[in-house]
Amino acid sequence: MARCIRLILVNLLLLLATSCSTSQIPPSSAVDPDLEAKARAALQQLYSTTPNAKLLQARAKAVLVFPEILKAGLIVGAEEGNGVMFGADGRVMGYYNATSVSYGLQAGAQSFQEAMFLTSDSAINYLQTSGGWSIGAGPSVVVVDSGTARSLTSTTLKSDVYAFIYGQQGLMAGVGIQGQKISKLSP
Figure 1 (tube, one colour):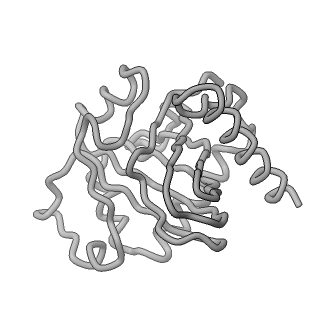
Figure 2 (cartoon, rainbow, N blue to C red):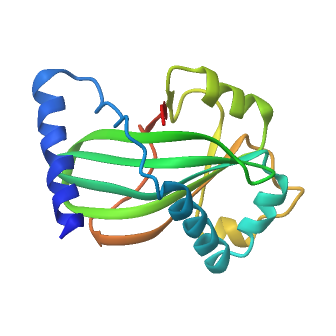
Figure 3 (cartoon, rainbow, N blue to C red):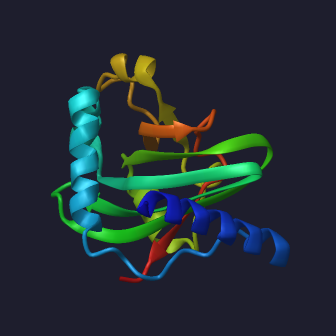
């Protein structure tokens, strides 16, 4: 029931955003008090299903985890979710919001999890100091699929950010992070 309400809210926000302006949906300012625990659980789920993700954890300077991103659309689509950035020592470095608005032939609703392993100081600094990080601008991002994950080694890690999308549920084809904007939240 709560998931249906959230999907309806995402669609309403989408309609509001597209009817008022061409800007993306603003991030919600309230941070769920259980967000950190949900993010840690989502990261453990990734490690249990994709063991080579642990290799990235060992090399990452920070990990940004979105335990649930909701995506819905009918011709016009939107996605939104809140996440936590953990430092290499496991401490919380900040809270973030991911949003995206898309246009095109699409229909359905889906939820998924996302983990972004930041392997350089410049990627962390960009995320913390920019007014919002639009994926495709700024540090280079590699989306890791199951085939790429199996071939990861310490010598093949050369990008600033490695992103895993996992735990998909629902009926919507083609989940990606292209066009996604990540903004810092105020707790």
